[in-house]
Amino acid sequence: MKQKNKGFIVVGIIIAILIITGVGLYYWNQKSIGPESVSEPISSTDTSWKIYLDEMVGFKLKYPGDYVFRKIGSTVAFASVNNTPITLVGPGLGNVNVTDLTLSFSVLNIFGKEGNPEHAVFVKSNMFPAPELNYLNPDLAFKFKANRVKPVNSLPSGSYKGYVFQKNERIYLLYSLDTNTVLSEMVKTFIFPGNSNVSSPVTSAVSGCVKTITLQNRKDGASIPQKVTLGGKDYNIDSHIESEDNWASFSINGDIGPKGKYYNPLAPTVGNPLAVKGGSLPFPDSIVIQGVSIKFTKVGYTQSQQEFAEVCLNN
Image (cartoon, rainbow, N blue to C red; front, side):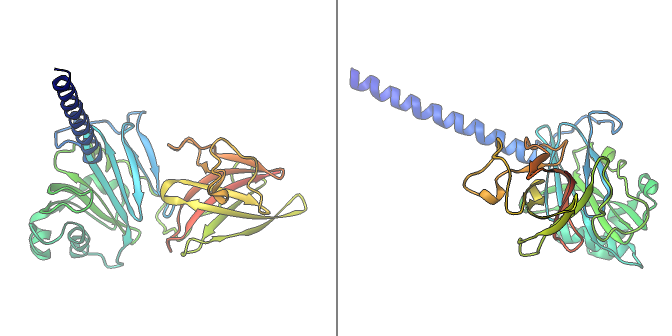
């Protein structure tokens, strides 16, 4: 009898583990791509909306407060548990003499020709005027519909709707599965810094800073130290920048400063990570090293795809 009971107990434990694992995988899948259900419209004037800032060009885009984003190269995916993802692609290289065919190439490069008509027909049947983008004064803009026959990475198969436009000779796409109603609100919230191209991050004066500098990584990932003079004293400032994850760490004359809460002894050059104030990471935005206060103010990529970090210095 004891042996039989023991067998029931083992079977029960196995079943429980399978149930927990199944629920976990289901939740993870829902969190990754979201359910394909119609979401309630959200007003872009809602104060709970957040602002995404592109550090390369300087444009801004609002997104709902319950969404999070992840940036990989020039692609940003905005997602929440209750909605299908919305994807932003750009800035991409545009054309002085942009045409509807130019923009159709940008769309079909993402969705592929399978399940979609060829370019000339796609322009006539799948691209439409987008007066809602007139506020941007774009070079050219369209709404579009496209199909994804086979899923690729995080892009599920299905029917998509989106917007493609060129501004200041750069091309942008914002799209989602047809079931997401947040897209039409988000596309109304772009803010561009004037009408000129921005080829590199602008080092602007930050209130209360003795000096604001921009540090960069080389394309191979190696840092580029800077020599800075503050109060008549020279300092060599170095950095480890992770633009994709929106954090960086800094050192002065090889000193990473006091070992803070998030210090990583296994990677001493990354020992005291900082994040831009207001970001989603728990890291602090400032540190004092050798009497110099470093406040982390911007992070991103230059036009040549070099990682950069802007810091405010005080002594």
